[in-house]
Amino acid sequence: MAGNADFAGKVAIVTAGASGIGAAASRLLASRGAKVIIADIDEAGGEAVTREIGDAAHFVRCDVADIEQATATVEAAIARFGQLDCLFNNAGKATLANTPDTSPADWKMVVDITLNSVFYLSRAAIPLMQAAGGGVIINTASVSGMFGDYMMAAYNAAKGGVINYTRAMALDHADDNIRVNAVCPGLIWDTAMTLPLGTQRGGWEPWKASIPMRRGGNAEEVAKAMIFLASDDASYITGATLAVDGGLTAQTCFPDLRPILA
Ligand code: NAD
Image (cartoon, rainbow, N blue to C red):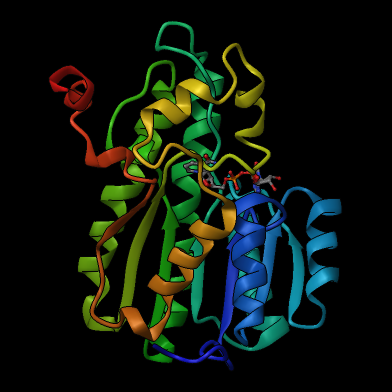
């Protein structure tokens, strides 16, 4: 395994870096020697994570759904730190609705933040990586991009797109020495996106019952998988989707036969 400073001299952008999984990834990258651009619409949150990390971090206010702001974020990485080695397309947004109940505006918002942003940032970053002789792109997809959920139509569509777009970019840029991979978090229950679900009827119990490891994951557990895929330890991995889900997607969802057969 590479040592703890294996990102020394590297520069990364982390979108949605002000909170949850993105903040955990930013902290971990900095602890391993990287310089990090934290890109988020939440200025207070982004500045707070940046202050905590110190000189190795720089906050850029960026709405990833806006191609001009996304492109400017890539330019900001060059202006501030002189290069770009790793792009973490981590932003995503869900609405809880089936198809007839999803407004066109909500559908567009979910797809813009979750899927189109990956295109906007990658489109600006790849030519720089090509010119530099290589790079790494890590996309935060979801188990909700691998399979369908009840009441998450737009999110399922957008995250499914992120997974297959990851494969397409991996193919197109393998000979540019640019690796492109996705992580697929399951229930990550310590982030702002997910915490409200634990306050619904039944709390976390039905969630835990559906997960073989019987618990949610933490943001840092996803960040560790992201940083592994971005590191030289993953030098022969491209186009992959790595589930970080406590075994959730290892199942057919048929009932557990152990109590039935006991
Ligand atoms: P979070 O709510 O903790 O953080 C989301 C961040 O995104 C916030 O800082 C917010 O300000 C920022 N953001 C929202 N809209 C933005 C925009 N337009 N431009 C820039 N930043 C914006 O969420 P999280 O749980 O850490 O989620 C991070 C990623 O992980 C998302 O792509 C999410 O879909 C994915 N994911 C999360 C879970 C989970 O259970 N938490 C599971 C699977 C996938």
